[in-house]
Image (cartoon, rainbow, N blue to C red):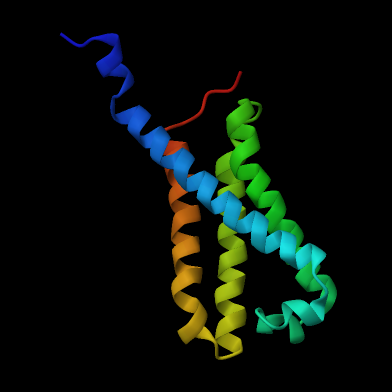
Length: 141
């Protein structure tokens, strides 16, 4: 006979815990990267992000805005349970950011250095979107 405690540790809660960890890590990463793109001067960013010298500053700032909004979208709707469907949508949006990053870095001949991290972030964001829709949905209030 299952107790309430053992039921609480069931597969759904394990999925949920793993997803919260993944969401938090991805959100922190995108918050840091996006925040840098929004707040740092372009010449400072060029030291660690070579693509910024090949695109207009407004594009760099737009990418930063999308990353910060995506980071907020990974956490806030799920945590507040207000429109939690926005969390997988944010994850899909961040996937598009990574597809753009892969294309941009490929055009600049930087895939040897950037492709592993770009594909990891792409996979993780798609995984979060899939799992929040299929395995551990968060009910709305």
